[in-house]
Image (cartoon, rainbow, N blue to C red; front, top):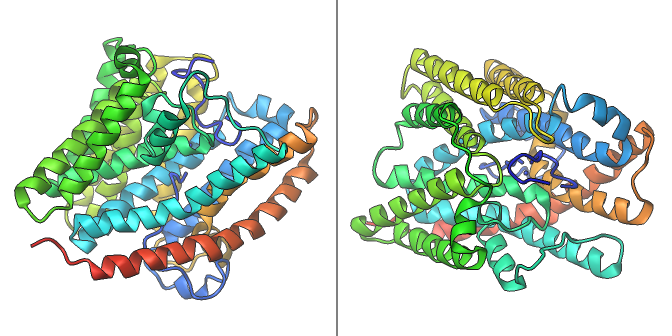
Length: 434
């Protein structure tokens, strides 16, 4: 299937959030689903949004195994997984720049990100490989690509942007998350981080112009020109240099590192992604739109300016999808409906941010990263053991949730939460560069 036109949100079988669903405040001291302590938090509404998005993404992926007939009817009209990840991307856009600015230090920001993402990532990848060795799941074929280059691409989390098949296909969204982190750090180091609205609008306009101009680069165009292995080596070295320099004490090195990382992210998203150029740019625009809303909510800019940015991004995104048309598994009406509902869901959450929200949704948001990464492994085991059901079986879908959620609570409690504690301890020992 053509990677440029395939449905990239087929993440469970075929990436939250997830976007990725990453929370910044400390985990609750009790179980993850006992979320009473966070009701008073001003970020509780974001957890609630993540909880909704996680449930929808899991439903989408479980439908391949248990609701194939229903999925075939639904997807052309409403892309459920695209809805979920767009909500995740909006939430990330709201939270991530705020996290960096609150710390005021690129070094501690990267420490926090590493300890937030990698512990569970490593556990899930290991579990999938173990299931493959046991014969109860199947790891995706990497073709002629070497194990070392594939491993390096995955460690950078940029594998989706480096023409490397995702070991777990939900991992594709982490590549766009990482690109967003690099861009956020770049803007912070050159003191342009308050220009989120302009960045979001610019990216959205570029997306629309690329479609209008008929720019149709082949998928992973840069890898095709340079070779997958050489590009992985070049990009991974550039990323390492960018992160290290951005964390340096020298202001000049910090600026150089930030700019290098930002350029790397933009180039990879624009010309080497597995989705069309316009959609990669829209994804980044959506994340920065979340940041623009944060700016307005904090009083850094006016709500009128934020509303103008929202209208512009929506118009460019919808126009780009409509002009792109139907191709392969991509249907513009399904994409547009999911995109508009995702933005509406985020707006509703924002409007309700000062109200008391359901404890269950907040708890689900707390464990949403575990739900996001664990569910495709369980589905892979289910498919490898029992196969996919040809007829709709709603009871099996409910049973899958009944297994997934307790497992996710355990992985949150014993993997995610300790990783976050270690990250905070290490970050606390690091002083911001002088």
